[in-house]
Image 1 (tube, helix red, strand yellow):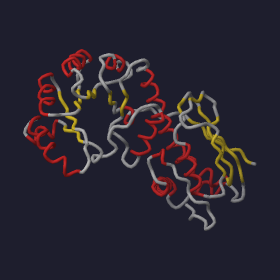
Image 2 (cartoon, rainbow, N blue to C red):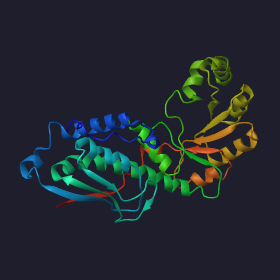
Image 3 (cartoon, rainbow, N blue to C red):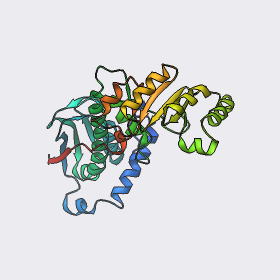
Image 4 (cartoon, rainbow, N blue to C red):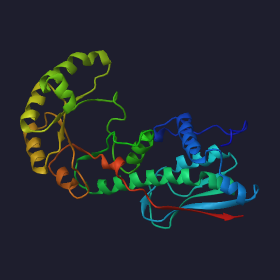
Length: 299
């Protein structure tokens, strides 16, 4: 991996990625170091150093475009002389055989970045595409589609970015983003009322008025949590009929979120209950990678 040249242009900010330019650069350089080791010996032994080429990153399936700025950073980190031209917009629905980007430069550099660029791009396009698919099942309904913290270690910001590109909304990015009292907290704190009361007593020390969300598994627990002062309820592993009963019982007194057992086949049934939002861990932990082609031609 080459060191940045002194006259290299400054990194452009990508706030939409949820990373600073420096964080993105560090993430990409770790990925390149993991893949390159001491260098691409096959390319070094088979390809003349000065040979240049061009390639297109091309969709082999219909997909939602996400991650082109990350792929661009892969090649920029290897050599500032590489030219990367996006041919599709982030969030666009691209048909199969649609060129997503054109990359031009020394072929050794193109090959050195190929797999890392594809790994990022296929992963992020896959998440955005899967998110768009589930989001489409909610057409005409008011329920929001949320992700979870079930992400690939080190890639959370990018994976949650892909969810946003696909039309979903992010749940907590980190544990300091919100108060969510789950079953383990309840068991250790002594139950719903005790846990909520402790949070209400300690919340002023946070200097931010975060809503209190409590995981519940029954109508009785829902009533207890609302009575204790919960602002939101996580309806855990309930059927659509059970969720509908909770919506009726809550009567707008707390925000309701469904989680657990939701998939493409039943997500609309959950949304039709009138629940406020539906969180789906599969958006990030099980989205299939998109199929993207990378073929270099000598110039």
